[in-house]
Image 1 (cartoon, rainbow, N blue to C red):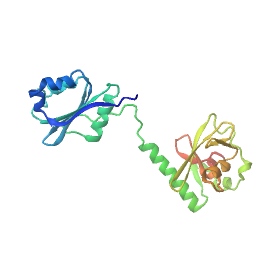
Image 2 (cartoon, rainbow, N blue to C red):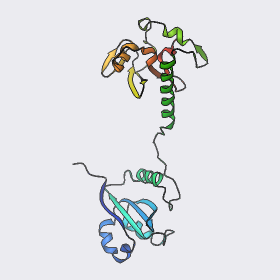
Image 3 (cartoon, rainbow, N blue to C red):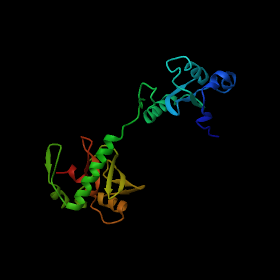
Length: 232
């Protein structure tokens, strides 16, 4: 049976409990790990974690936080394996006045940059669909988009374009489609293999599609560009 993260909790109670009913609080919190919140006049003041909640709450009756809080909440957890990450997340979201540092999300990827690039690629695809062919500079070279677009899909082979399976994406209106371009030139979409970009595009959009313009792959700079731009 799966165990829940929070095993017990006590929310928004008077800080006087710690002094007047010290033994009762200790029965539940001594040696137990978890997250606690201190309040002052109804406002969140401080958020922290501890491997021994009872000892930490008693400590805050004497340290720099003394007299700055009047109520508290505590959340006893099953273990402390992710407590520091949880504390950092709470600090970033809640920004309590008593916490000096903003939590750092170790190992977490900031999605701002990839999301921005994906948005730009989607906008370019929409512009292409509305305005037709255009010429774009890529990696210092100018590639004739119109010339490539005029080439029949069956005249080109994707074999050898990548040295390992690579993610490709396509956008149309509010929808995003994801497939895998393999070393042998086939495209894997929805558990099916397709020999041409247009075949895979047709399967994704369920209508006739120019796959060379529809599918995008990251170039050396990390931007999403149309497959046709990888050929001169």
